[in-house]
Amino acid sequence: MPFTSTIQRLRLGGWAVGCAALALLASAVPATAEPAEQKAPASKRLLLDATPNADVIGGTPAGQEARFAVQERLNEAADRIQAVTDSLGDSGFAGDRIDTAANTVTLYWHGDLPQQVSKAVERIERSGITVETRKAKYTLKQLLNESDRLAALGSVNGATITSVGPRSDGNGIEVAVDTDSELTSRSRAGLDAALTESVDLDITYGVAPRQASRLADTTPYWGGAYAEMYNGSGTFQGSCTTGFGVAGNNGAARYILTAAHCGGTTWRTGTGNTIGTVLSGKDPGRDAELVLGDIGGSVYEGPSIADGDTNSGRSVTSGSSSRVGDTICQGGAYSGSICGYDIVAVNQTVNIGGFGTVTNMVRVEAFNRASGIGNGDSGGPVYTISSSGAGVARGVISAYDGSQIIDCPGVPNGNGRDCSWRWWYPDVTVAAGNLGVHF
Image (cartoon, rainbow, N blue to C red; front, side, top):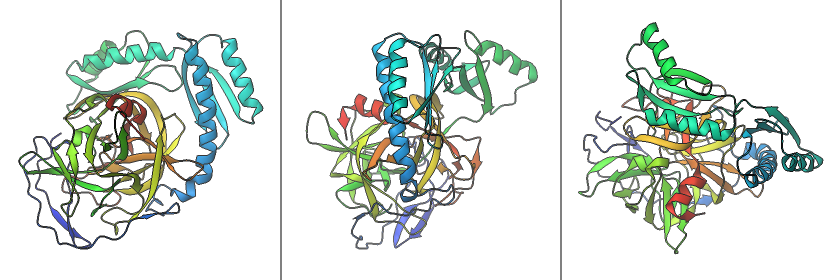
């Protein structure tokens, strides 16, 4: 939904910061940034022990390293199973998940487990990892086909389908429906009947996901930094967060991979330096776009722009897909670096209010429902940490659940800023592949 309230300017560390701006602002009320007070930026530092304001959910990047090491081994094991599954073509694979506390990979399978997969499982178990195989009612292919059908409906009985995707256990599909208007028990029953066709559905009702939108960055520009978007006429449109530095597959050019709904023609820092220009070729189906400029390969870690800012960060050297059971870190400029969110669903299709339908989405939740992301965080990095200490990109912040609003970390609620403990990001491997870039 377009942001229409007045942009309030907040003084932080001597710079003017847009305090409340939605990420999608194509139809927003034009706002002109105040002249920024110039201040020499501090040198950027690469630290592997940076400590952000992550105690809300219970994990800092440094404090998560042991868990990430186990997670890395489990993901590698699951990838080996996936490779065998892919070689079989049309198979009974329904989904998988990992559990770092139990050192377990759970494999959901429809029908009998093929001999090739059984052998792969045996080899992994000999390495000390437990693999549990559980029966699933449907294959992943069946669930994805039905998810596509439901997503294509757009709306049913006057209610908008806001997200749809397979359950991680292969036993059905989760569908969320926007019910801003009241539904009678009769119309709700009719909606259930209209949605249900060939697989079991878990239907929830709420509000459509909303766009989620450090301060004086310098070259080479990093991810996780506050950025302002300006249109071709130089008019301020809103603010987002920079994502990941990537390189073109066909050349040496460097880009920032970020959220397409942030838009804009030119991106600038909080002190007015030009970060780069937005390329016309986007991947709106994954809510991804590229900003061409003098871009580095690190992301900021530490407090938000409201909590003292930060000049420390972490190098990101690779990207990876996501798996249910993983935990991740996020680095939105407005919320600050926070780790410990759980991945609860993958392959989701989400209808983002005011932007459109986005696929290959990952749904994330805070287990204690006490920490979230919100407006201004859009485009920011979502990542894990490898055993070497380098960051591994997973995606860029895209949308949050407008029906699950909580107090915001970092920049507080108000002036259009909301936060939620449930949010989504697109799979970075798909987005990067579609845009022709790599880490």
